[in-house]
Amino acid sequence: MLGSLRARRGKREKDLRYLFEDCALDIDRRELRRGPTLVAIEPQVFDLLVHLIRHRDRVVSKDELLTSVWHGRAISESALFNRVNAARSAIGDTGERQGLIKTLPRRGLRFVGDVREEECSRAEAGPHLPAPGIADRPSIAVLPFLNLSGDPEQDYFIDGVVEDIITALSRNRAFFVIARNSSFTYKGRPVDTKQVARELGVRYVLEGSVRKAGNRVRVTGQLIEAESGRHLWADRFDGDLLDIFDLQDQLVTRVVGAIAPQLEKAEIDRAKLKMTGDLAAYDFYLRGLASWNRWTAEENAKALQLFNAAIAKDGDFSTPYGLAASCHHFAKANGWASHFDEAEISRLVERAADIGTDDAVALCWAGHVHAYFFCDLDRALLLIDRALELDVNLAVAWQRSGWVLGYAGDSDGAIESLNKAIRLNPLDPRVFLTQSAMAFAHFIAGRDDEAARWAAMALRVKPNWLPALRMTIAANAMGGHAGESKRALDAYLGIDPQVTIGKLCGYYPFRSEAHRQRLIAAMRKAGVPE
Image (tube, rainbow, N blue to C red; front, side, top):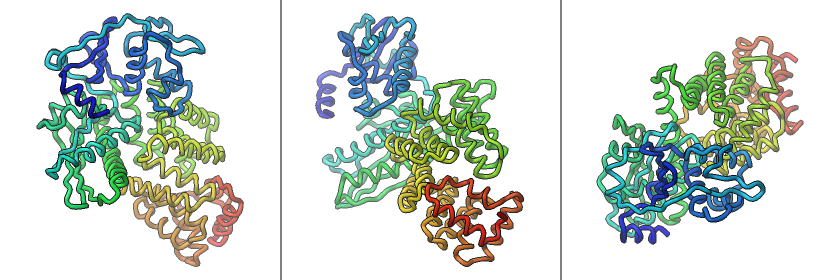
């Protein structure tokens, strides 16, 4: 398919555009314009529009859309409804008017506007059109990597790595990722990252190179903030070509796992510089994320307010629902609050699950919070597994998976998930969350010394972190290290003088009564009041 696409472009350097009302939909450039204005549009919404217009002579069913746009992946009715509404909004239509996209009940959708197809040369289309505007979300273009091997036969491997990076990043709803067809127009050309950013309307550019020597390959990559030219991240990855597909998967996992946190951090820094009087939902979300990452009672409460402000600005923005729910979880887990509105927590969880069917971040937090407050471990694991289906490179989803599998009594599964979280984000400043979960998983497995070791690592990163202190008390008591257990209990009593065994057990929604009894025995041995 790629070969035929290149051949077609070789025969004619022209773009196909669909013109209707005041809109121009450019297929090759993947751009939608209304008059002279470029409209920011998500890739799935763009693909939905293209499919409806290409098949405007008939009704398009929901199943056909799922096959064409979502590649057969099941999504909820509300998620499809939101995408159709986004498509209507992008072209100036509404659900009430239905002047362009008409819903036929129980049958599907049909594009009913008058459409004219036009071919125009790139030279004609390019210079006279203004550069795309920067998307509201962190926007990134992944450019074709340079082949430094001197062997054109390696292009297929290099292009495959880049395409997989684009696909993996696109699964994360937090990012606006330029499609492969646009990024690859720069293949084989000297590029200026500032010019690329202007032409594609992105804030960040990922570029790199691949060098092969024998059966070894080295991939280097660098993430650049285009406006300033500042390098946010750079690294290199070495691998063995014996299993080329396995190597591709490893490289993609490591690159995406490394740059996703850097994009998040850069966006938080940008949001801090904005005037507070001009905050869109995404800015409230980013400011909330900055407070959420400080891990104090005051900042957690502030994060909850900001996530709720993001929800008030955009009720269909799913990620803040999941993170607002997580604020309640952390308030309980750390003793920052004692009374909780479970109806509100349930509302946040259900809303995140309902509208976040393609939002891995919202789903993984909804799953964990659902387990933590409502003890429904089966549904929690379904939500988290769905998050991982959407984005297998999302470290926090593996982290949440580790916790909930631990609650369910699957210590080996929990440890496997937590190891994946560490591998995906080895420099995570929130690593104490993963380390605390690892301590818990080893504790329920009866490996007390290993549990104590992981809890100690968490406390070195975040002193007086209550989940780590709880495991330090329990694991050292069961392992015969009374002095270590007493020191941890004294520190805990300094933070929560009202601690009891019953209160400590309330932090863990155990499926196994044997695991609950083991924790009770450990706390009794440590001298925790009944």
